[in-house]
Length: 511
Image (cartoon, rainbow, N blue to C red; front, side, top):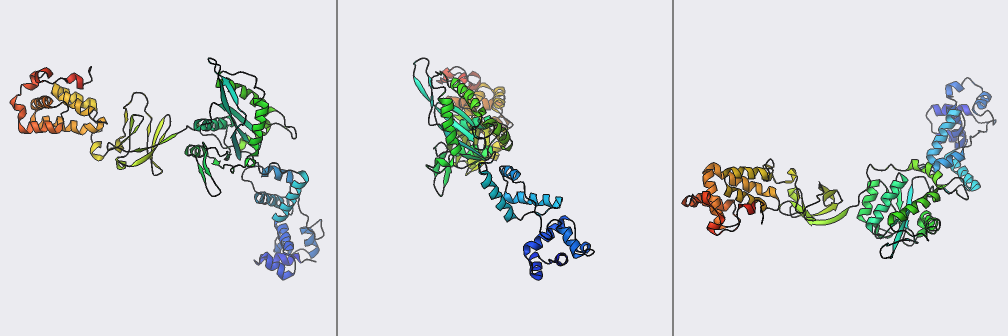
């Protein structure tokens, strides 16, 4: 007869289960079962001291005469729980042990728990969803059989390619036709599929098309940059199939065949004149396809998807926007050119090569993988500038409170010739802000030499060149050449001095 009292006593002294088993000459399982049963009954060594051996044995194992009575897990519930993401048998075993403790029953050990679970699967053949957990995977591919639209003017038949996405757990599918299979169509198809499903699966399994996967070997997988961005944006992971291994994505291969027969074959005799008409017909048949009852199990793709949708990752607030990548060098004016529009970059990156990420609305600049700045993308007339104050060198920042109109207004108060020179300086800069320093220096000359002399020197400079600058005018003032014909500023006309471009030309008048 097992000395259960001694087991409890030695345990109260802090001995391990193995040492207790060795000391009493019993199996470790017996010790474990005794301690678990005592714990479930809140029975400790002092409490057992008042009982006889028979009473203690009957208390610990009332039904078995010393043989523990184990509680069989509910393996149907275990099977359903195992279909959920991140679920493991060990976690379910711990929950099972806690339930047994609360009900005063004895649980099986983990090894026996797993053994009985395998037996349950083999008897019920319930292996279908063990590797297909809800919300875990989305498989995508282009259908081998396409569709077509008709040019209503020429009668030309234009091929259309059908994209298919499927969630393997439920079999719920999405299909959409495109006129080509390029990068943009590939990305837009994924975005639309996620919108249709109302969520994102944790893994994305595509084929090895170059629009998605640049390289896939045993040691390395290189994804297309835009495709990788899509995955990061939606919080999913791309796991391409092995090359020439369609069995790596059997669900979508099956769905492609079903879509081809149930949807595309059904509309083969219909004529569509626009892509929208074609996709409307596909969508109608797609809904019927998802609602069609299964032949070998209960429910339909739609009813199973109702359960799976709860496991999908929520969609971001806004859909992913396809980006284009370019390479540029930051110019000396600390700007980069994109489609003849100009965007500032921190001046520290002058002469550096940077990566530019372009979307319809945003321009982002990256240096060695780190984003250094972003701008709202400019549209409309060419030659616009987007300049941020903190990108300027320190000696430019002090002029940020100034703008071109302020300099023009100041110059107009001094004289017509000064206005012309200021306009020449501003128009001669690729970025207007870079002319502010010269304008400030030029207009400040009136403090030292007076407004009248500054007007005269500007008039004199315009006799010499069509593109006067600060240095020329400063030289005229220092040398006093403006005094020789001071009346020039008052009587200056372009024709009198053989100068054919007047102030109107520089101030935006007719040319």
